[in-house]
Length: 146
Image (cartoon, rainbow, N blue to C red):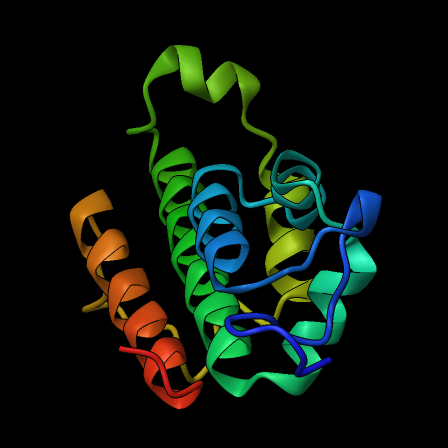
């Protein structure tokens, strides 16, 4: 609904709007957790509101996709380290290579994916934050904000 400045078509729990501020917080939490469910719950919005905004707001959808790309890349790197035996022992005990492969296949990552090249490296947290900031600024500009 376009009635209130800074809001989008999406209502969270308790009737809260899923506006720019909530979207920014959601994206930060998504980057931390990799979970739409956890980020939505912590932000106080319904997952269906997040999905509705992703379907109607290309900049927000691109920001979500960028977060998932970073998580996919990190999972690929852990899988490679696991196979090579270079994953730290404590992490290796918790890591499930078969599950990682299934997740990468489901999400379109892994060997043979055009987005996956040997030259890629994991983005640092600073790079993730900078990319999210650029996306959020673009969202603001697209909505007529500052």
